[in-house]
Length: 206
Image (tube, rainbow, N blue to C red):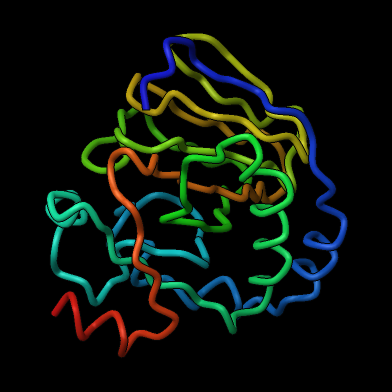
């Protein structure tokens, strides 16, 4: 969404429990959504694990087309590890700041040491949402470049990123950067219909 500024900051949240549970996950946890990650982000470095997803890999319809009906089908992985902790962050911290919006895509996204996300603008449905970032694991040498300005995003803080302008990310540190990304769709555009199983969502999007 075009915010008129590169970035807005909305204060801090308690991410202690989320970090504790995340760090206890095996390496295989980060590979469970590899197919969806590639479908949505191409060859972008690092993995992502989705907890809400408006376009899982099996869905062939474009979500921007579904918005024409006033609703958007969203798969929730309610039984996935960390769902409870992430849902708490959304309900306690995010929803009060965005009361007329609903989550449609929520993910933990990695950016490996020494890697970059090349300059780009988001398109399609992503131009309509608030793309929120909560850094969980980061370093002073992880930098967002937005419209030519350079920004460090503090861990545990909530940021709304202007994703329709040119932006990129550099991880010049030796740590795996992990952000919680929450895409909030204004209800004036559409409302999500949540499905808590692949079978339920396949039945309406196939």
